[in-house]
Image (cartoon, rainbow, N blue to C red; front, side, top):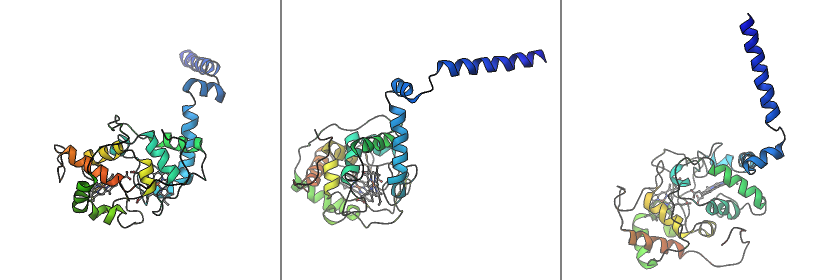
Length: 243
Ligand code: HEC
Ligand code: HEC
C-alpha cells in the first residue's frame, strides 16, 4: 500500500515539475519552434475551409488532384504550391485565392500541405530549361493530348475522380493554363515528366524509369519548351513570391 502511495506521489511530483518547467503561454512556444506549430494549425484550419471540399480532408484528392502524394510533394517547390493557391486554375474548377487569402494565410496553407511530405526533395531547381518547342509539339500531340486534352487544355473535368491509387480513369489537368504556367518552373515540369506521379495515371517518361513510353532527357526538354510556349506575358495580379 505504501509503495502504491509513493508511486502516486511521484507521479504528482513529475507532472508538477513538468508543468512548472514547460511555459504555458503561446509566445514561449512560438519562440521555441520559430512559430511553426502556430502556422501549421492555422494552415490546417484554412485548408479545411477553403480546399478540403475539392482536395479531400487529408489531401487525398477528389474534384481536385491529390496533394498528399509523395511523388508530387517530392518535386514541388514551395513556390509552386503557394502560387497555385494565389493564381488558381481558371477556367478550370479551382478559383484564384489572391483576393480571398492574405500572403501569410497562403503560406500557412502551403506549409500545412508540405507537412504531408515524408520523402526527400527530388525536384529540379531550374527556372528555365532549353528545348525545341516544335519537336515538343509532335511528342505532345502523340503521347499526352489523350489525357491532357488538345493543346493541353485539360481532360474532361470529372467530379470526385482524382483519387490516389486510381491508376486509370481520371483525366489530366490543364497545362495550357496561365495559373499553372505562372506557378510552375520548367524544373518542376521536367521533374514531373521524368518520374511521373506514382499512384495516378501520370507515368514516368525518362528512359530507365520503366515507364510505358521512354524518352531521352533531350526529348523531355523539348516537351517542357512546348508547354512553356503557352505562357502569355500579360497584366493581372502578380504573386509576392516571384524571384
Ligand atoms: C472547386 C474545387 C477546388 C478548390 C476549392 C481548390 N482546388 Fe486546387 N485544384 C482543383 C482542380 C480541379 C485542380 C486541377 C486543375 C485542372 O484540372 O486543370 C487543382 C489543382 C491544384 C494544385 C496543383 C496540384 C498539382 O498536382 O499540380 C494545387 C497545389 C492546389 N490545387 C491546391 C489547392 C489549395 C491549397 C486549395 C485551397 C486554398 C485549393 N487547391 C482549392 C480544384 C480545387
Ligand atoms: C494516362 C493519362 C496521362 C498521360 C498519357 C499523360 N498524363 Fe500527365 N498527368 C495525368 C494526370 C492524371 C495528372 C495528375 C496527376 C496527379 O494527380 O498528381 C498528370 C500530371 C501531369 C503534370 C503535372 C501537372 C500539374 O498540375 O502539376 C504534367 C506537367 C504532365 N502531366 C505532363 C504530361 C506530358 C507532357 C505527357 C506526355 C508526355 C503526359 N503528361 C502524359 C495524366 C496523363
